Length: 590
Image (cartoon, rainbow, N blue to C red; front, side):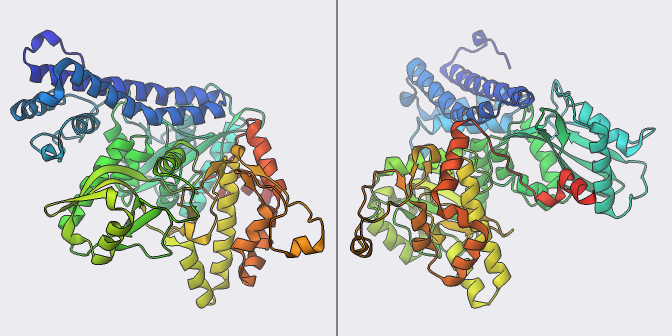
């Protein structure tokens, strides 16, 4: 949106214009790096993919800080009076009336102004506590949000073929006719039989592919009569550099797992992000809009929407915040609201005696998790500052923990508890509690599944260049789909920064039996043989772990994983089971 500065004479006009210019610069850079994802995919530039994801995370804060500096330099923003700020907001709303990303621009306005204004201003007169501009049915100027396909002369197979061709990837397909037939047969198998085609039959596909790691995902839905069928098709590279369709996901819950916050964010080229979110919500109604924005790389918007939903929930509930179930951590104080599926984490003032680190180090670890490929094994967190909670919603145990362990992290202002820095993440059942429950109920199948998942989580994180550090059961959680996810980050390290060693042979029997360490140990030395001693005290758990993951107890696995990472190898991680991949189905058929 181009607006002549000469049209405006007052400070309020110029400030509003500076704010919208700051946002427009941010989103044009965001769109550009998202658009380049297609080129990175075509070139198989997998290291470039990870680099771009990491760099994109900084874009927003860089532009916000840049805009704050401009307002302070040009307008002495801290001295602006209340009536002027109110006028700035009203004029800013006017600039959003024909904007393609009004909801994002409102959030950008909040991000800038809350760095300048005192929290007494944090209400709807001065910032966007509630959204003002509707995002319904915003039309793109260039490409439509989705394309529609009709099975006429060429049938469903022809429509699928046209969908793939329209993405115009500059790499040949290994065998597109074979893959189209595989897609058709998978649909037929899923539906048992192909339903009669109604007059409104069409296939709608989002205009941009969703790029992540080494895959491009085609997201769409088929409409037939009153029924809608969602689908996602992952496109991958073969060993000889050609493209192929790996499978088709036809269950909404499987598609939803693609958008799990335990995975890296997508790169998607969108002029109208609200259109993409609206389309995704139609096929994933149980997925909060906040999480969809986050997975599209629009984290600040996701946080804004999450917090609006949270405040709404507080107004319509009466339960109190309690300490989260499970073993208390040495670094983080964790509480939860039973009626809301999230936990709230605060960095303590004083850590446990075994933790040799400070607050800044812990913050760096959490940022590190946002910047790496989480491969479905590390929980994402929403980070907030100066969050206001109703004081009367906290039970006395939580208040006592705050006063004792984190007194510098909060303040009380009347009936409000203000937490200065907090992390929020999806609540999961701690793995130690889950295992205990499986053992008490004699659920051997559930126990084996959890231990197998636990080892797989460690293995996959290692292949993604993350060493979890503290691998105790209590630091992992179990999702509602039975997947084990890591969520305690204060001791994580890059695999390439660790030194995995074999325990040296003791010089004599007496030394070995003494219980004292007879060999030098450096800061980042890791001895995988020791994992069994600390983790596998139960004979049942040890037997199951040895069955599936015994190699994790030797340095060879870790050293091999390190070497692959150093050589630039990027592992394949599939957010769906191997048995539904077309290659697996073809191999079994033959």
